[in-house]
Length: 115
Image 1 (tube, rainbow, N blue to C red):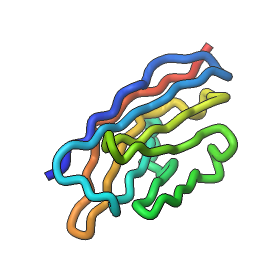
Image 2 (cartoon, rainbow, N blue to C red; image 1 turned 180 degrees about the vertical axis):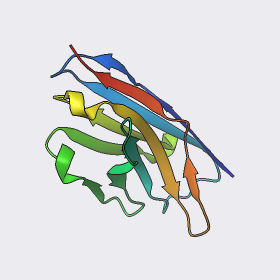
Image 3 (cartoon, rainbow, N blue to C red; image 1 turned 90 degrees about the vertical axis):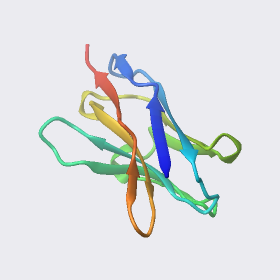
């Protein structure tokens, strides 16, 4: 079993920054991919960034240059540094570990970007 706990969300003005953290507990493998998704009101959940077990990472084009994903394997934690935030970044952000047999999700952390 895997449990994921996100933190770091909050309210920020446009142009501001936040750093989200997701700490995993349970049986975490170094080969696991850890990912961030987000879901805005009335929209489907979308992939934001991934950090793979081989050390490679990817950030989706719509946040590239503003968001950075990083990972600390010793702490079983993945981070999402979000800079130059825009109102359209407002969403609940979820941590995810995909396995061959199921997806693991955290409870989400809310990010609100507004004046």
